[in-house]
Length: 78
Image (tube, rainbow, N blue to C red; front, side, top):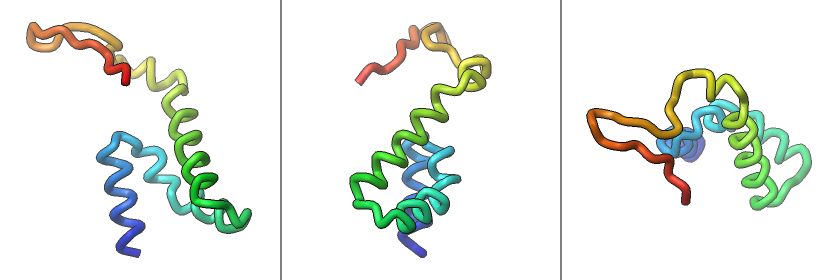
C-alpha cells in the first residue's frame, strides 16, 4: 500500500490528479485483463489525456499564453 500512496502522490505532483484519483480503478481493470505494465501505463496516460482534453478545463480560465506579474507566459511545448 505504501507504493500506491507514493504513486498517487507522484501523479499529483506531475499534475495528473485525475489519474491519481482513478488509480485503483485503472489497476483493477488492468489486473482483470492480465495486462502488461506497458499496457497499464498506456491506459493511465490515455485516461489523463482524455481528462485534459475535456472542454471544462479550457473554460476554467487558465491562460494558454499571457502576462503574469509583467512576465510573458508561454505554454511549454516539450
